[in-house]
Amino acid sequence: MRVSGQHFRTKRLFPVIFFLILITSSCQDSTVEPVPFDTSYFPLSTGKFIIYEVDSIVMSDFFNTTDTVHYQLMEAVDSAYTDAGGRQAFRIVRSRLDSLNGAWRIIDVWSANVTETTAEKVEENLRFIKLSFPVLLNKTWAGNSYINTDSPLVYLDDWEYKYTDVNETFDTYAGTFDSVITVLQHEDINAIQTVLYQEKYAKQVGMIYKEEQNFETQPGSYPNGYILKMTIVQHN
Image (tube, rainbow, N blue to C red; front, side, top):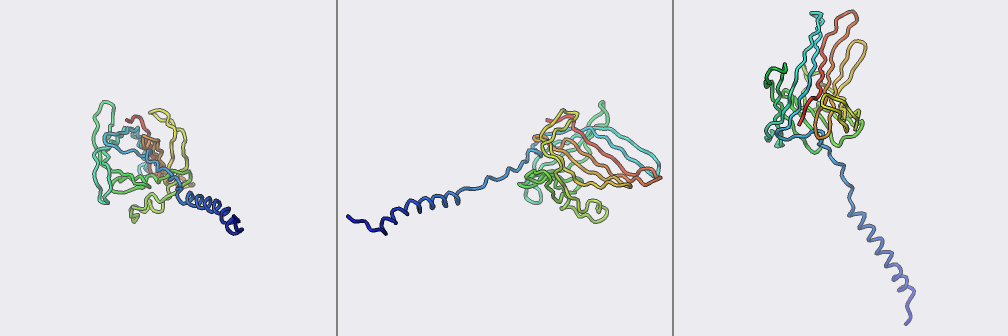
């Protein structure tokens, strides 16, 4: 039987066409693996707590004095609830211990929640976007975007949070942590003022260090402002 050239070419082309269909189908079915949203830097579960050693320095140019206070602060995750936005949130009970022989006393209650892209904390009725997921070096975000920065909160306006360190090692009273990230919330340092706000977070633990420096250093005048440092000493 004679096979026409057209039929022969069709038979030869069929495997090629079938192969192209397979490739196209494979490309359409394949999906890009999503970047994991690493919420382990901001764990929230009832019963979790962190205790910090707090050093507070307040400088007054009016009295020409510097007051230094040391105490411990515990943040304990309390019960879960549904917030006004319909999201699961957790109450954070904050207690203060002024001396080792004293007793813990509750000073206030904050709240925190995690979404697919953010870790948020409400402090004194102000909602801060503490972390932005995924965690990437040099990534920036508007951490104070929920806050109405009209006076007297104008100093919080236009802050650009930034991951300045990722997977660093950091020593604390509670030991050495690895996989630590640093969030630089704001920095403005010059000849007449020092403004620095930053926090560090460790996986499966949460915030392990916090630093706030906000003071003026006018030439010939006593410094005016404060320095606050919180360093983890214990956690579960």
